[in-house]
Image 1 (spheres, rainbow, N blue to C red):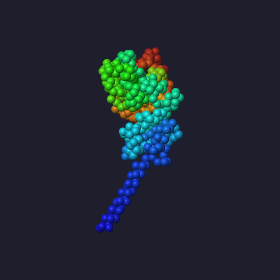
Image 2 (tube, rainbow, N blue to C red):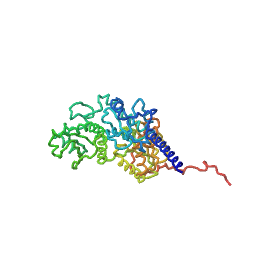
Image 3 (spheres, rainbow, N blue to C red):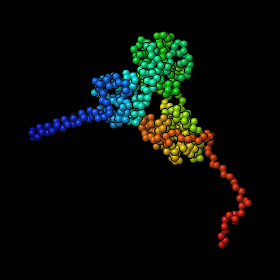
Image 4 (cartoon, rainbow, N blue to C red):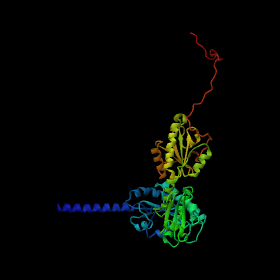
Length: 452
């Protein structure tokens, strides 16, 4: 029995050793030398990334993280697709937690874009599939190229503390003073985020590029409805005293008719942008829901916004005014819910814009129908669920995180649009047919009679 027990123990140790080896293989097997993903660590990060002129897309992961494991195949596919264009790397932040801590990684997987200013990477906020990630990387690369062509380095864009530099997005941070503060901020009726800084303050200097980058993004994404400003509190001490500024940097939010409040969010550009968009969403009217009356309405809406959401509603004779207004009410509620996305919203009646329907694969049936078009890529997605608040919300939520299937708009361009009259808000009327006088018609001449 003792001999058997010793044999069992040896077998158990062997099994545990094999299991340990397999676990090590699983943990270390995310990426290998045969993949196009560059494994990064504290020893090579500075050389490979920080001293590089290339754009880097870097995943910070933990081997035990289920979401990281799910991302692995897409990350490899992304690296292969971007090979020679954008560098794609990965950091085991569980093993190399110093690197994760250096870039404020608090969850897994975290994806960061290291562009022109490698010391201030941007958080990637898009979908977690390979197509969405590739699109995000190419957009970042396009921005980097534009910055280089215009002479911007991508670093500190508005240099109010140092007094150097120029150009870039410093124009998007409004310099506020004792003389212009009331006119620009308090009397504007718009939302302002205002930073009170001191030129000698180290934290203010660190915030500078984040504030500048956020100012440009917020200006674009809110159509210049939310503003970022800056007050040198050492020069304009009246303003600093007026708002009780005792430390630097202090950020305050100003809204029409309300007392200013302290900004409590994070200090990265991503945090600032998110906070500004929340303020915009809370204070902005929902986007207008437009009927497609001519080609200009479709083109302008789809060109001006990232997505244009289009509904094809049943004919007015099928629903009446009450039924149509019910569909439009659902759309307006969704436009309100997703107003932070700054999408365009359109509708048309079934059969009125047949080329548009054909280009979206709707084609004469299944009304009401809905499609979302990305005019820049000429891609669209179709609502597969119900035309209801729940169904449309699920459809748009998936689109906003990069999920859902897409197809190319038929013909690769926006279709021809008929010019039509706007709906008058009334029930439809059956067409009136012409009356014919049959009194002078001899029916015997028309129909042969079979006499019995």
